[in-house]
Amino acid sequence: MSKVYTTQELIQILAAERQACLKGERLKLDVSVSGNPILDQFIQAEGLQKFTAYQDFKAAIHDYQRQHQVSGIIWKEVIVKGKCLRYPEVDPQLAALNSDLLILYAAKNSIVEFWRSVTTDMDLYLSFHHGKQFQQIQPEDVERIFMRSEWAGLCVYANTQFLELILQLGWGKPEEACYQRGFPASGSEYIHAVNPGKQPIC
Image 1 (cartoon, rainbow, N blue to C red):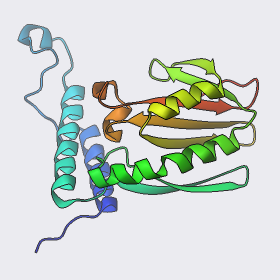
Image 2: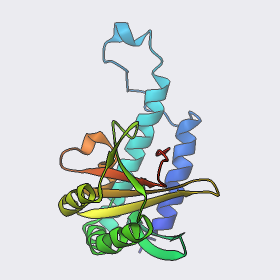
Image 3: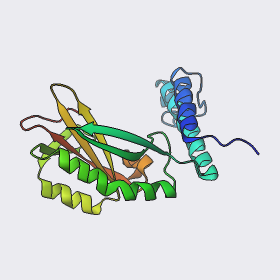
Image 4: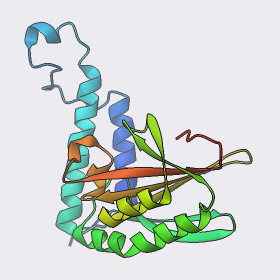
């Protein structure tokens, strides 16, 4: 029986392949920028060929995950204001199995409760236009987003001068939720909590 790669091994394989593609060691040569041979001769296609080569490899890894039931879940731990949370998330380069989605669904409430407990009295912002713009919102707005979401994610940026906690509330497939290509079947909203008077930077 052949060896089945683990989640961590697949993450390492994808990281190595990504580096190979970035260095130009892997190209999908049949990819053209516009499909118009006259226009394509004036446009550098190598970047698109690198990107496509990696995307094809990543899709093959996702197929492998589904075939061999290799989870895309990694476990993270965060400590904010003396409070600790251990929570699951799908590695950004892997796919979520149906069993992974059940784990994410089960963790949603604890992630959101932790976020609420450490963001009391912080200013809240909803990001849009791919995180380039922010609109200040109220806790009741977060509740509405929470009610229509299926799972949650968390990201913390902290140093001695600044604290930002980003709550991701998503639906559908996590691997497609952060990209517009998955919308409307998959997507997510990002809520940024910052100290009063500060602006989100992430």
